[in-house]
Length: 412
Image (cartoon, rainbow, N blue to C red):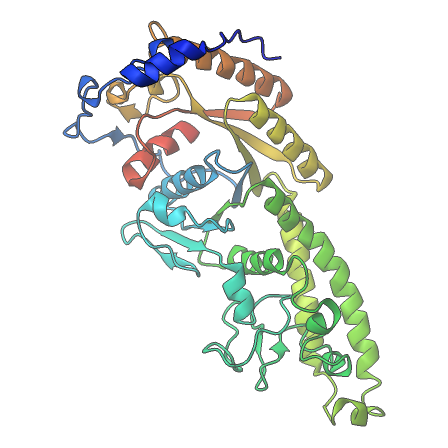
């Protein structure tokens, strides 16, 4: 089916090979490690030319694509380059894998914190489950009132904390006692038997709303989760906006019923007017986020792919789905291209120090090069009119600020 011609194994020869230790044609030859040149650990420090002045660009940059293509690397490199140019920059990851810490080789906090003293670089790795446990999730349901974060002050990420009895006290609150009437502390617990489906994405979206409105940051770089999670995240503004209208209407109706029905709700007071104001404010912020994502002057959604046919198909599907949300794709980043660094950027001094695939004598390299060229040509055709950036395949792992600076030079 594959067109490969495989010779059958002769049983007598196989038995002879087992007895003598000579596998004949089936023996795998392994190159001993001492025949491979040791890497030069004493090579000179890589010198990367800094950006000329502040980087002109959008307020928000989102990197998306399938898992394992290098989104975290691109987000970290872009954020570092932006901060080094003097722009106060936050890089935030919504990917549960949380590899920003590994990429920067430093601990990244769950809430925005400065990770460099010499440049205005901030970072955060959103932990939706932790946010839900703290009662910060928009639709997270009850989180239990016994934890250290329970109580009226547990509202660090937007004022959606816990009440004195441990029940959810966010903009939804307990929907004016609806949860108790349905037999549970939280209406979401009562209706869904637990947190609302998609509550982890809702928590991530809620925190993104906070960070993207934070006046400390001039630019926010988002390392999104793999494609499926990202699309669910991007669907939430529409879903939450629709739900907000219904919830506001419901709260207004039920507040007028409380005076005559206090006994049914344990003598609780009607919802405070501020409660509805919180909902209105959240609805307004959702609308601002949606408008920002659809404005190419403010947001650049960058699809990251590798030069392989399957990655091209995945990227094509992602762009089509983003089109449905009205979110334009401004940049396509092709990562791990088998070409010299000097062909991509002139900002890296000493680029000849980087190992390159041997396309003259290495048959494996030649075949991979052909696969990549075919995928690149297809991507160029599919994304015609889109800015295409290439990042070479490096022999060394991209970790630490030195290598991130090299990647950043490729993305300028």
